[in-house]
Image (cartoon, rainbow, N blue to C red):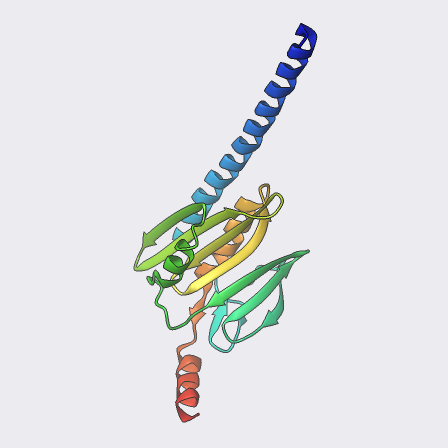
Length: 183
């Protein structure tokens, strides 16, 4: 190998390494920011619910729309991005059941928060392409989306606001249990 070729090879290698390191730095910064935002939002005063389903009510930011509702799931949409809100009203706000199930799937980033009888968490996992699966939860409430590295922190904030706002409708839950017993 000629000196000129060696220098070219070395330059390309160094450039590649620095670009890859820069990308990892950006990812690391986005994830660190998301963790701080998740914990801060978890500890904030919750938003008042503006939407409801059969078993629960929740805050829906103005820029989000309800795409589909089922008993325990709400699919939300903002622009071209979808979010899934799952609520298990049988789990208390300090329940770790959903987190433990998700934890078994070996998510890359796992952060938990506890405050005032509540258990919250943030899970971030790289998926296809340059996307990340972002999951936030509080007790029996879980919200999931696919996010880019540039949007992880923003998505985490809105998702935690929504999860934090969920209120179980005790009357509707009781009526459903009675109906289920009759069937």
